[in-house]
Length: 57
Image (cartoon, rainbow, N blue to C red; front, side):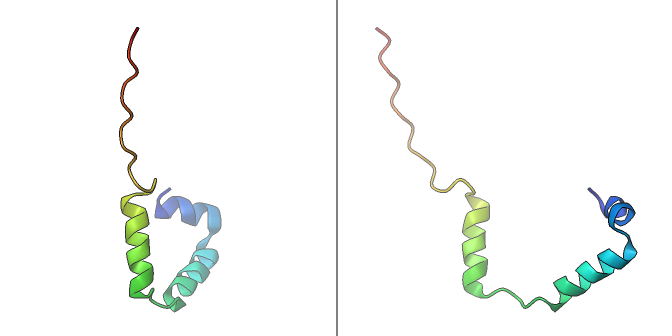
């Protein structure tokens, strides 16, 4: 959804309230930023090792 679609559904008053809440939120700590960076770069966690193919017999 784009901003215009949000505005059509929620209205200007609700969007202004959301913007005010976001503006008032504190900046995240460096630790939180690092944890989020790890999550966002590997959302599924560690990449599993490939399993060997079963012998076709």
